[in-house]
Length: 292
Image 1 (cartoon, rainbow, N blue to C red):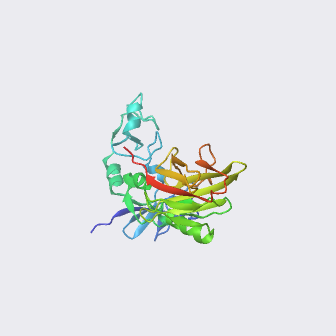
Image 2: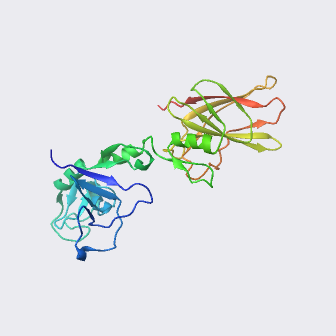
Image 3: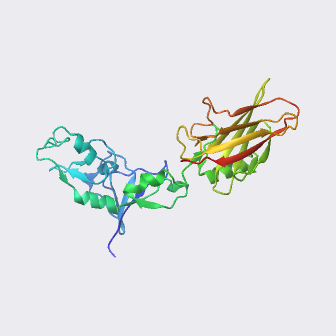
């Protein structure tokens, strides 16, 4: 079997940066030594490994990762098809101005098709390797993508499963397991409360904040490492446990990866439970929002 080509990322922010041309299992020529450029990708061919500059796989015009079809000038400067279409003078290289136009670079296309890279969340436990061109798509849905502890003084980072363990065992936050569509009770107590389900690993946080003289503000948010602005993936039906004053509130939760601590923007509070002697708790029902 022939030698395979594989690219591996250095793991973690503390990983040592390697210089261009460094070879594993061999020595560099003294005249090749330099301190320019920091790189994050390691290419392995058989038992040998070396370093490839990330920008070598980027378009020389837009600086985004190259995708086939790839074009190159006579000197070798590569460009993506999208940028090539936008060039006013397609006969002159955008970088070096050599004339002669661009030709298809089949070799680099084959290299990109054969290269495999580990997930960017390897340090958080992901073992998946994808083709270079599919890496970004995997990263968007990787189950090992990190979330952060909402305590500003804590530097914990990990998957939602690891965060659940951290919040309940290290921070000692109270936790309640729930099932979708099934009602459960929560006591009103100032501070944070963790909600989790074993069905799909979903993790939610509930925050009770006194707002005298009105009562307690309740905020329910989904902890999602892939959260984007405007995400509201879960529906919450919250009601009173008071037999003499029945009410309910129906809303969708916000989503956050907690990278900027707990959300504080308008709308982060879902409802206010009034201060009445019969309100010792609330009942909650959580369901997924169907996306059409």
